[in-house]
Length: 162
Image 1 (cartoon, helix red, strand yellow):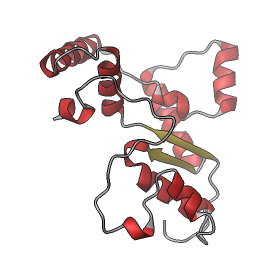
Image 2 (cartoon, rainbow, N blue to C red):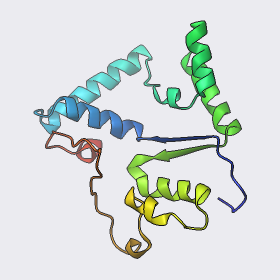
Image 3 (cartoon, rainbow, N blue to C red):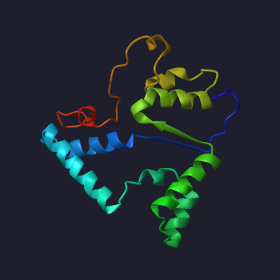
Image 4 (cartoon, rainbow, N blue to C red):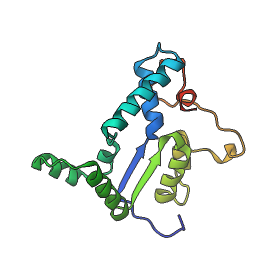
């Protein structure tokens, strides 16, 4: 973000992979204890690692609609390594902007920098979670925005991630 013009061709916001996975396990198992959840996750992850399987659904967000259509029509299935290489090439060649929603304020700041350099729409970005200029010295609270599905578990993802 050196001030030079940016012409993004692709924009995607993703959740941190580990936090997303933990949150999903908690959502599907709201009555499990912290120890049970940690044990479930440990077993699942260790089994997947032994089998050499990886979670790679994020790569589907980082290919172009044209590429997605081509792969569907041709029935071509990429290996994990091929998906990684294609994703890296797309990131370099498409001027992609990636935001991580666990850091939504920073992601929105990046997006605003690209499309609203004159701050004409800052209040719109703030309504979606960009830290307001008056809040920059305050500690950030974890308020939930509309559209967010609350985890039914009494355990937070951050507890499991410790």
